[in-house]
Image 1 (cartoon, rainbow, N blue to C red):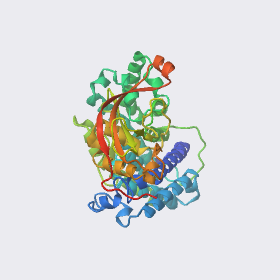
Image 2: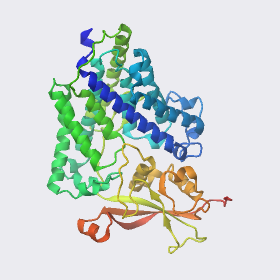
Image 3: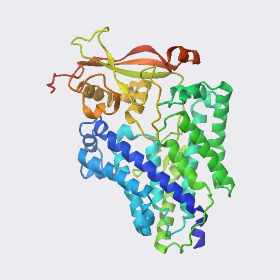
Image 4: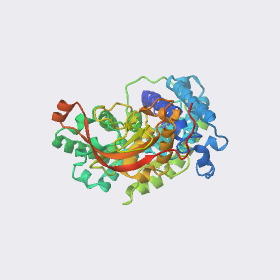
Length: 473
């Protein structure tokens, strides 16, 4: 069955698998460190309350069988352990069936998390990790050469990620067609990185060249993935370079990194693959059968891509096996930020001692320079960006966030960079105000040392206190 495998992609598979294992590790670590405050029993959107109205068939998850914060922590840290084992290459030491089962474990655990994660796990890269992770189960280990059909399906995902993103841009915002979106994007993106200020101040002709290059990479180059080598390798390499540019310009969680991992699987790297026997019949049958199902399920994302009403980041099945992707179908021209403040004063006044809560990633203090967090995902910081776009995005959780701040809740405060109040003295009142942020100019940066300039817009939430006073130790 020489037609079934491609031994020349032996090293490409190895690099892809280790990269995917590293991303799994980051995803599970993010879940383990943030879940209590976000979806725990006392979280902003508690899992038990969600499960009470959600049938298993709609969102399959281990947590339908049992939920407790301790059990969630066991699942998340177990995912970290299995991901670390895969990163170390343990799958190569197992028989083929054992390696497949080992790769199935992080997929099943992360599916369980995503399907109860609600708003906090509504990002496209969650489904992308699951779709790619499921295919990794079929890739095999050192006992068999990489199956051609699985390599094709990995390229098919990469095609949909890039081409879908290109289409949504051309349909969604005329600034992409005019090549002017990058006049604003680096300033208004969800979470700027340490170099975003400099990217924003690049000459406008270069911004236009960036946008044009993006259209070529997303609308033309993806078709070259299905051409003979070395053209396919050149296409994948160009995608990797584009994604690295995006890594430098902002914090997009693991979206860029998993796209790079997919592109790595399409590279034909120089290597000397060991001689292995033909793939077992049972393995070939499983791979071909599952691949046929996945190709059939691809009908829905393809139909979405060619539709004039194309949507971004939608899963079409509860297992997240085949999904549609896209990013920045529209670009904000102005950046708004919600600034949360608290005071210990008994009566809240405009001249009270209002102290600002500092977030880890989202802009706050105009003098604080953005940091690099990706591929780690700061979920609360991202949702605060959406809240600034419209209060409707925060309607289900923002009030509970304020309540937790009034309680000095430890789990919630761990999501922040700094609380202005000591652990034993919570604020009496918390308020939120909306500000407009813009990058300073080179001159303003030299004179003030601030990378941001902010202007008050309006009240987002009036001074709020707990409904009933509580005793604190």
